[in-house]
Length: 130
Image (cartoon, rainbow, N blue to C red):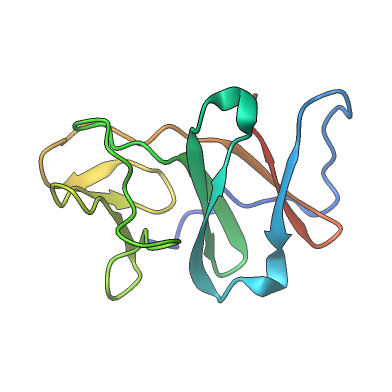
Protein backbone atom coordinates (compact mmCIF):
# COMPACT_ATOMS: atom_id res chain seq x y z
CA UNK A 1 0.00 0.00 0.00
CA UNK A 2 0.97 3.66 -0.29
CA UNK A 3 0.38 4.42 3.40
CA UNK A 4 3.95 4.30 4.72
CA UNK A 5 6.18 7.35 4.59
CA UNK A 6 9.32 5.34 5.38
CA UNK A 7 10.37 5.34 1.74
CA UNK A 8 9.48 8.95 1.09
CA UNK A 9 12.14 10.63 -0.98
CA UNK A 10 13.35 13.85 0.56
CA UNK A 11 13.43 16.78 -1.86
CA UNK A 12 16.82 18.41 -1.95
CA UNK A 13 18.47 15.57 -0.03
CA UNK A 14 21.87 15.11 -1.66
CA UNK A 15 24.26 12.28 -0.97
CA UNK A 16 27.99 12.31 -1.48
CA UNK A 17 28.78 13.19 -5.09
CA UNK A 18 31.45 10.47 -5.34
CA UNK A 19 28.75 7.79 -5.17
CA UNK A 20 27.44 6.31 -8.39
CA UNK A 21 24.00 7.74 -9.12
CA UNK A 22 21.48 6.92 -11.82
CA UNK A 23 18.88 9.45 -12.90
CA UNK A 24 15.86 7.30 -13.77
CA UNK A 25 13.30 9.87 -14.92
CA UNK A 26 11.56 13.08 -13.93
CA UNK A 27 9.23 12.61 -10.94
CA UNK A 28 6.35 14.20 -12.88
CA UNK A 29 6.74 11.62 -15.69
CA UNK A 30 5.32 9.03 -13.29
CA UNK A 31 1.59 8.78 -12.61
CA UNK A 32 0.51 9.18 -8.92
CA UNK A 33 0.79 5.38 -8.56
CA UNK A 34 3.22 4.06 -11.16
CA UNK A 35 6.34 1.94 -11.66
CA UNK A 36 9.41 2.30 -13.87
CA UNK A 37 12.03 -0.36 -14.53
CA UNK A 38 15.68 0.43 -15.20
CA UNK A 39 19.10 -1.15 -15.77
CA UNK A 40 21.54 -0.75 -12.91
CA UNK A 41 24.42 -0.22 -15.33
CA UNK A 42 26.78 -2.24 -17.51
CA UNK A 43 29.09 -3.21 -14.63
CA UNK A 44 26.13 -4.90 -12.93
CA UNK A 45 25.98 -7.49 -15.72
CA UNK A 46 22.39 -6.91 -16.71
CA UNK A 47 20.89 -6.53 -13.23
CA UNK A 48 17.80 -4.38 -13.15
CA UNK A 49 15.69 -2.53 -10.64
CA UNK A 50 12.43 -0.63 -10.48
CA UNK A 51 11.04 2.40 -8.74
CA UNK A 52 7.44 2.83 -7.59
CA UNK A 53 5.82 6.21 -7.14
CA UNK A 54 3.05 6.03 -4.56
CA UNK A 55 1.59 9.56 -4.41
CA UNK A 56 4.46 11.68 -2.99
CA UNK A 57 6.58 8.69 -1.89
CA UNK A 58 9.21 6.80 -3.88
CA UNK A 59 10.30 3.21 -3.25
CA UNK A 60 12.95 1.32 -5.22
CA UNK A 61 13.94 -2.35 -5.30
CA UNK A 62 16.13 -4.78 -7.21
CA UNK A 63 14.09 -6.59 -9.84
CA UNK A 64 14.55 -10.04 -8.28
CA UNK A 65 11.82 -12.09 -6.61
CA UNK A 66 13.04 -13.55 -3.29
CA UNK A 67 11.11 -16.77 -4.03
CA UNK A 68 12.97 -18.10 -7.08
CA UNK A 69 15.22 -15.28 -8.26
CA UNK A 70 13.19 -14.38 -11.35
CA UNK A 71 12.59 -10.83 -12.57
CA UNK A 72 9.18 -9.63 -11.36
CA UNK A 73 7.82 -7.72 -14.36
CA UNK A 74 5.50 -9.20 -16.97
CA UNK A 75 6.04 -6.41 -19.52
CA UNK A 76 8.28 -3.31 -19.56
CA UNK A 77 7.49 -1.35 -16.37
CA UNK A 78 4.78 -3.93 -15.48
CA UNK A 79 5.42 -4.45 -11.76
CA UNK A 80 2.08 -3.61 -10.12
CA UNK A 81 -1.13 -5.57 -9.66
CA UNK A 82 -4.15 -4.64 -11.77
CA UNK A 83 -5.52 -2.29 -9.08
CA UNK A 84 -1.99 -0.85 -8.59
CA UNK A 85 -1.87 -1.31 -4.80
CA UNK A 86 0.77 -4.08 -4.63
CA UNK A 87 3.90 -5.24 -6.46
CA UNK A 88 3.45 -8.65 -8.12
CA UNK A 89 5.87 -11.25 -9.44
CA UNK A 90 4.67 -12.43 -12.85
CA UNK A 91 6.23 -15.90 -12.50
CA UNK A 92 4.63 -17.46 -9.40
CA UNK A 93 2.25 -14.70 -8.27
CA UNK A 94 4.03 -13.52 -5.11
CA UNK A 95 2.70 -10.13 -4.01
CA UNK A 96 4.59 -7.47 -2.08
CA UNK A 97 3.70 -4.35 -0.10
CA UNK A 98 4.85 -1.28 -2.05
CA UNK A 99 6.19 0.67 0.94
CA UNK A 100 8.07 -2.15 2.72
CA UNK A 101 8.79 -4.67 -0.05
CA UNK A 102 7.56 -7.46 2.26
CA UNK A 103 5.82 -10.47 0.74
CA UNK A 104 2.16 -10.36 1.75
CA UNK A 105 0.92 -13.31 -0.31
CA UNK A 106 2.13 -16.16 -2.46
CA UNK A 107 5.12 -18.51 -2.20
CA UNK A 108 7.55 -16.36 -0.17
CA UNK A 109 5.91 -15.36 3.15
CA UNK A 110 8.21 -13.49 5.51
CA UNK A 111 10.69 -12.57 2.76
CA UNK A 112 11.15 -9.18 1.11
CA UNK A 113 12.43 -7.46 -1.99
CA UNK A 114 15.92 -5.95 -1.81
CA UNK A 115 15.58 -2.17 -1.46
CA UNK A 116 17.64 0.39 -3.34
CA UNK A 117 18.32 3.93 -2.13
CA UNK A 118 16.16 6.45 -3.95
CA UNK A 119 16.13 10.22 -3.75
CA UNK A 120 14.21 13.09 -5.33
CA UNK A 121 16.72 15.67 -6.54
CA UNK A 122 15.74 18.79 -8.50
CA UNK A 123 12.63 16.98 -9.74
CA UNK A 124 14.57 13.86 -10.82
CA UNK A 125 14.16 10.34 -9.46
CA UNK A 126 17.71 9.26 -8.58
CA UNK A 127 18.92 5.78 -7.56
CA UNK A 128 22.14 5.13 -5.65
CA UNK A 129 22.87 1.46 -6.44
CA UNK A 130 25.62 1.23 -3.80
